[in-house]
Amino acid sequence: MRKISKRSAVVLGAAGAVLVAGVAYAAWTSTGTGSGAVTSTTSVDSKITSVSSDHALYPGNSTTFVVKVTNPNAYPVVVNSISAGSSDEVGGCAAGTVTSAAVTNPTGTIAPGSTADYTLTATMDKNASDACKSQPFTLSLTATLSSNAS
Image 1 (cartoon, rainbow, N blue to C red):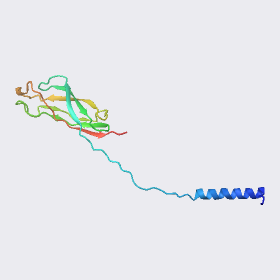
Image 2: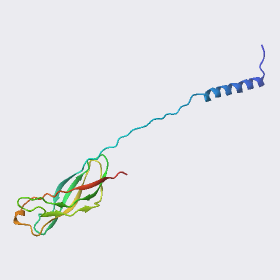
Image 3: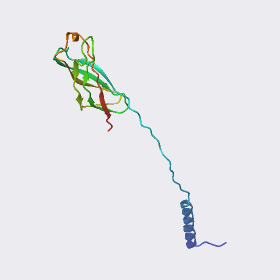
């Protein structure tokens, strides 16, 4: 049996290491392609409800009243504006006897599923008839909102 010299052992060991490294390097590689998908939500219209008013109206007088804006969406919104309002005919009192001015850029963000209060001013026409006494007035309002994602 033939003896292997130290030099031969080193050469054979180095050759074996190269062979193992070559096998490891020759492992198969690949890449993946495809796509991901997401869906956007849809907006749900907010609601405006009356909360309170400070004082009863009389001809030529103004008073403040509070409305609550509800955000039913899954994202925060900001109120950009609340439209002017005008009363309908009620109990013989002419339509438009009570009005409110538009509100632009009110402050605050409404969190998802939350509400915020806004104070508006209502004014009764100075020429309101006696038919307007003791009447409840409803003003149609529209709030314009936009998402306020950060």
